[in-house]
Image 1 (cartoon, rainbow, N blue to C red):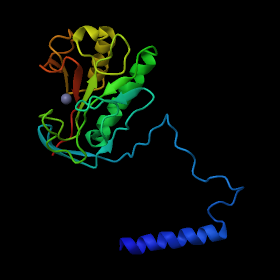
Image 2 (tube, rainbow, N blue to C red):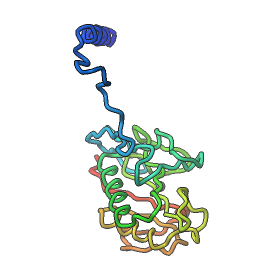
Image 3 (cartoon, protein in one colour):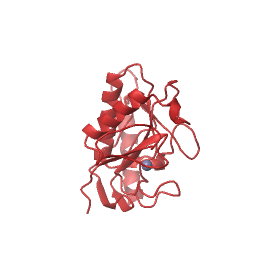
Image 4 (cartoon, rainbow, N blue to C red):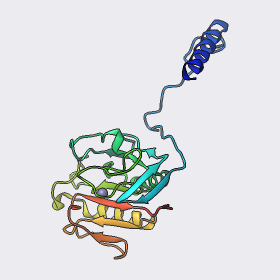
Length: 214
Ligand SMILES: [Zn+2]
């Protein structure tokens, strides 16, 4: 079936070339170059199955490696960008994250790009030793902005731009996050039902959005 379809496509392409159908113009390429500032996202209606610590992701959407206002960070290889298989979430999570990133950047044009870490695997499930959750496309890690504006995670809490980090927490709370984990030594606060201190979060906040789980 696939070979038949491929043959058809190739035959069509050959015929199109022969008739000049593909490019009736003056020989300029038909396909425009991709916009570096507008990374392609294949939007789909995603489903978060189960729970963040025992779940699956159906029809996930992948966060681009980077954008004008954010970069992705691989917390295992300690580099930009994060590997593609670690960047999948529900469409809703991506919309929330990208909207917060956009509005944060608009409010703080002087701020460095935000660093986004792990989301979920393409089809969810156990992520690996670094995460118990992150299993059904509802979780994402975001690194606190550094006071020295370097685009990498802070190593110590005194490297965090506290004002920007608190603003980021506030924005995710307003965006409807169900949980925002912050490091116990960061001094970051918020509504206690949402913003909770958790060990191992002194260099990033962990956001979970509510899901229509099944
Ligand atoms: Zn996390």
